[in-house]
Length: 489
Image (cartoon, rainbow, N blue to C red):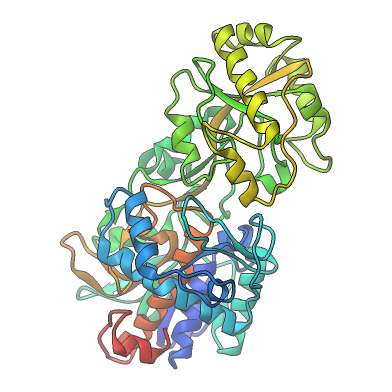
């Protein structure tokens, strides 16, 4: 690590940091990247790599007409227009070009329909009417490998296993960082250190909803998600936005891993609330499912039968037939020979549960769902076989909870140039942020698979380009302006 002046220092080597570092270096800047862990990738590497974007070459090759304007409208509507429209519009307009940039670097996304987040192609990301979920080959790992190769090709130096301690601030301007008690000077700094999902104190303070899962809560974010961005923000009196927002996925109470390891619940299942009534499409996107489940009085249950349990595929840790049997034997998962007995054990009305299952059996095994349209969701997921009836005892019921903490949305507020804003709303000279660290795009509602990755890489790219411009003594530019287009975005 050289103590000489650098044009740009990037804090964090996840998707946002790598995108910022590569983009700054493409503009001719000398770039030094610090990563607190022993490998690059952060939460991006742990993800499916899904990237939400509009008006892309992948969509066009599939004959899909889309636009950034449609994406923007959907994004704002889903978030109740709480977010700053200008910032969100910038993201929506630049997500597509950022995806094309990634493809140019070597990311492979075939022009075919994808049934899930693990099949390369174009998938339904959330509840959008136009599919925008771009699934890359080799998942998030593949994205990181392509970005890391570009990082090496551009000569970006990396210091691993080194956590930046603080910013260097002189006369209201950020002029570098301190790492390992060494001052490293730079013309501009990009904070891309991730969120704070691994910091329980900050979760309690800024995203207490994540505690609704109680003892069943587990975290899938990268170990480096410690909230360093908030400490850096305090140094420059940065504004903080996104408090109370994040992504917590609904899971069964005994799940402890992301579904890649835990497995999936059986197709033949019904979700019922404290009144014993079905209340949702069991395969609804997590863009909306957590809120639906959390809104149910008396909580929520997943109900399935013996055939569904026995037919669970092997090789998974949680949704496995033997694991469910162990939970039932312990009494933690309820089990009964009849639906009436199961309802009594659940504390829900017997007639309501029996009626809910009877209607489910009349509809879903016959390929229709007049109430919640689950047949459409199943078709979009590539399901060709209808679910079996729920009619073979014993029957099981397990609690559903918002328990899988994926990412946090509170961070230092940024503008459309990815500049960090102070509490008065003015940009902090020389300081940029992106990803979970740079808040204002990930909002009240997660728009679906690929929201966080697209945000990280798109705003990381904008942050890197503007950090390089700052290093050259040029002003930051709006991403839709001619100057930014010329810069390559």
